[in-house]
Image (tube, rainbow, N blue to C red; front, top):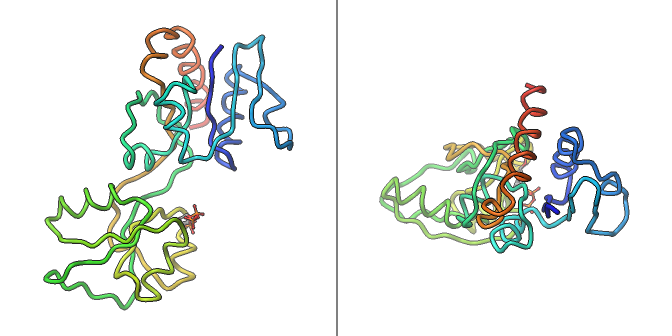
Length: 209
Ligand code: PRP
C-alpha cells in the first residue's frame, strides 16, 4: 500500500485528478465529506488530505511514502526527502514586493515581512544585505502599507493581491511549482511501486503539455 499525502485545496484536487488519470483512482477522495483518509485497496493506494505546508513533514517522517508539495515549502524547510518530479502545476513565483513609492536605501537595514524566513534570509545574504525579518503567518501584503516593514517576500500567483494593495514586484527570487516528493526509506523499500506511479504521472503530465 502506498500512502500519499495530498495538499488540501484546489491544487490538491487537480493533483488527485492527474493521479486518477494515471490509474490510481480512489473516487471517494473527492467526496465532499469531512473525512481525511481514503483507500483503494485494489489499486494499492491510501490518500490523505493534509495542510499544504505540512505535506513535507508527513513525507519526511514516513507517515506518507510520497506526497505533493510546493517548491516554496521544499526550499523553506529543506526536508530530507527526494524530489521525484516537477508536476508543472501550481505555478507561481517567490518575489520581493514593495509599495510603488518605495525607494531603497542600501545603507539602512531592510525590514522584510514574510512567511518564508529562510528563503528571505538566504536571498538577502546572497546580496550581502542586512535585513530584519518580520515573520507573519498571512496577509503579508498589509505589512508595508501599515509601516510594519519596507518590503515583503511572498508568493505571487496572478499578481492581483499586490495590485489591489498598490504594491509591485521588485525582484523575482524563484519560480515555484508543485513537486512529487518521496520519503527516502520508502523510496528504497517500495521502489517499484513509487517508480511505477511516478512514471505513470509523468506520462499524464507530458500528454497535457
Ligand atoms: C498567497 C500569497 C499572496 C497571494 C498571491 O496567499 O501569500 O497573498 O496568495 O496570489 P495572487 O498573486 O494570485 O493575488 P494565500 O492565499 O495563501 O493566503 P495568506 O494570506 O494566508 O498567505
